[in-house]
Length: 167
Image (spheres, rainbow, N blue to C red):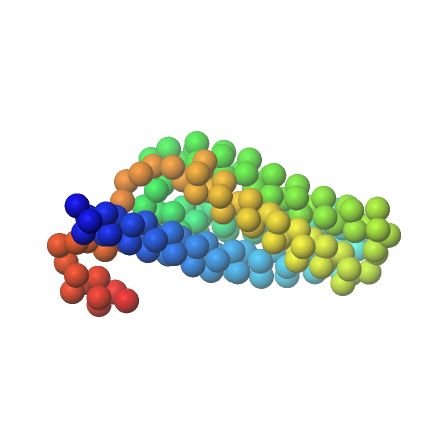
């Protein structure tokens, strides 16, 4: 009984760690996509429309993020209903994008910060940290909720040698 409990707790920790690490990697790439597009837009074609630029950059990064999270980060929890997941993913990302855009709005209209650097820090540093925390928990508990697991993703009690090789 204690051994089974140990393995179950260990599986949960390993699974959570892998999800956090993969979510972080996907988020890092999405951050680069979002930041590059946002900086390009506020430095050029949308220099007078920073809120719209944040939304455009966020939408492009969101589409990348859904594909990467569905097929890599949470592949062991995805359901067969792609449409349901995509709708929930978009709703959660709209909330996350609202958090980031709200930070840009507060910086610009409440604090009077208008330089590219100040607006960027508000939207893609402060806003991103807050939105990322929200998104991880939203994805884990509301979007990707199917409990199927792939045997290759989780260590098993029957094969400690394979588990050691994965580390």
